[in-house]
Amino acid sequence: MRYAVLGTGIAGRTIAAKLSALGHEVVVGTRDPESTLARSTPDAMGNPPFATWHETHPIRLASFSEATAQADTVVNATAGAGSIQALTAAGAENLDGKVLIDVANALDFSAGMPPTLSPVNTDSLGEQIQRTFPGAKVVKTLNTMNSQIMVAPDRIAGPHTVFVCGNDTGAKKAVTELLVSIGWPESAVIDLGDITAARGTEMVLPVWLRLYGALGHTDFNFHIQGARAAG
Amino acid sequence: MRYAVLGTGIAGRTIAAKLSALGHEVVVGTRDPESTLARSTPDAMGNPPFATWHETHPIRLASFSEATAQADTVVNATAGAGSIQALTAAGAENLDGKVLIDVANALDFSAGMPPTLSPVNTDSLGEQIQRTFPGAKVVKTLNTMNSQIMVAPDRIAGPHTVFVCGNDTGAKKAVTELLVSIGWPESAVIDLGDITAARGTEMVLPVWLRLYGALGHTDFNFHIQGARAAG
Image 1 (tube, rainbow over the protein chains, first blue to last red):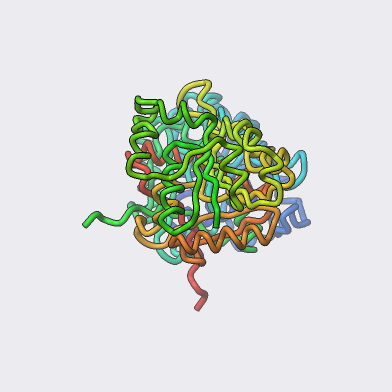
Image 2 (cartoon, rainbow over the protein chains, first blue to last red):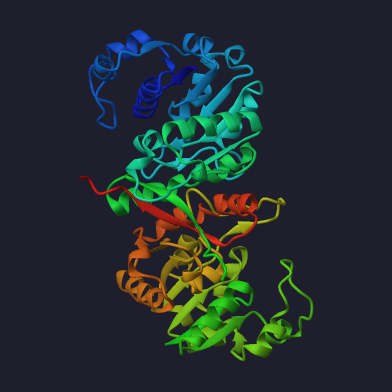
């Protein structure tokens, strides 16, 4: 498969490296490749500049539109607040008919910490993306955990859950196959229905952030634990 | 201990029955005991009328204020949209200095299904209650699961999580002891910090409702699954 991974932060890097290691053709998309490569200071989260990572991960970097044009599947790993803008730059015509895997969270840091969500409650980023790019087959998934767990589910002890939702059944099936190829057991994947379920999975973020605060790390995931068999 | 359980729906009934079975003195609080007992039709969820339940669970029913006045610990199991009104009827003076266990969810059905949350994102019902009744020691807990699991955690196969949050450390300790007496392993209790963490646990409801839809039942709970030990 030919993937575009949009976003050069930790999520984008981690997903791009994993897809590349699985043998896929991957192009990382960014607003302006030259300025992304020119940055020499760590980002706000203390992550090393993209160029440093790029030295050991020689994955092609291109503009949002160039990366998306060559891909058959697109991953939105941009910061949620900038996702619509990034996907607009990628080009609706380049997204048309393609599976668009949305792993972003619409965290709003404008009023300080803890961040709030925008949109929220009666809308979600996943739905916004689907509305704005009706030709794309948006599947929301993987946004409820840190990016290392996304691509290495065996970091977690015992079973844990990954949610998928979206309007296109075939796209959800393709994403589930990708998740299985990454190492997710098929039994870990819960299909929550259409893209409006993104409200639910995005609204998990506030408790995720509180758990980060309480546990002191993000090496955890949600597991949906079922009932005992009657008997 | 002397408990007031405010609310005569399934959550209130289930919690009152369990506390009574544990040997506590329990009074169930309602707006108007006479009209609660007079109702003869099932509620909107299809639950039998309170009077039917009351025949096999002869737990005293009183007004919100009378139930609260006699209690040393109060459980808010009213519908979230009516919780502030119910607690106002209970009386700030009757809540003063007491542990107030808030298990409610501020579900807003006014725009149809699925319900939204109100308040949400920058506020929560738990915080509203604490602000409105500053003399109460509000502990938000148990709102992320159905009421049968609240009082019978061994319904669920394998470990699963119950969150607590609140501003008063002693109150959280007392609630944790109550949870342990109900059957929750202490290791299942995660303290998320002060009452503002109620935003996080209340915002879990939308994904809970989607899981209900996807699984076809509510016999599940969230478990926070940790990382494998390094080695």
